Length: 256
Ligand code: PEP
Image (tube, rainbow, N blue to C red; front, side):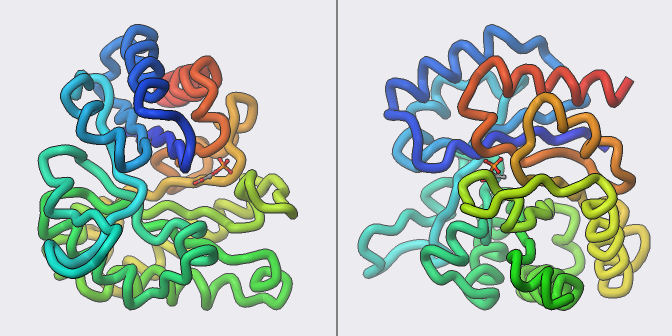
């Protein structure tokens, strides 16, 4: 399986800044066939960047989209509108869940809408600090995973990626702490077990599972060697070009 390195730019960069960053990133990267480098700019930058990007080197992801294709949904952009523009979309990112109130029902509709429009959803799941403190991690992970996949047919599971992002480890949260590779391993094992029980061993093995939470060039190698982890979702560190390139190079070294 490829290793996925996904940069989530969140609400950062103007369209011009995003274009300059992409230009520099394309220059800095060789064509790594076994590493899928993905960046997720703001929605407004996606269309111009889609004309600029060399898809042999980098793929684009949306940070979010709405599940209905058209209609009276002021302010939204649909997966249909993004099809052909992006290859991937984050779905259920914790900032959407906890700042904008997305629930598993809505996230399930978005996961299905992405697949329907030939966009691979990266379903983000993860427990909060208090859920972990109250030993609810396993229940939360199972609910968010099966809830987010509930409108996906078994045949479409191979189009989905999962990102495990403990909310308490995301750099923008006040309490951000680094997750240890052992803590990540335990939850990734649970994700794979849950997928195996729901979809069978073979289907479960083929789902890429990424880790995200304050990943940087110095801790990337530790997370990438956790059994069952196939890549990284990187927020803050992906905004600094040299750090993002270093993380991709770490991924290359871990692979070989
Ligand atoms: C993210 O936004 O998905 C993320 C993991 O952020 P950070 O790397 O900054 O913790």
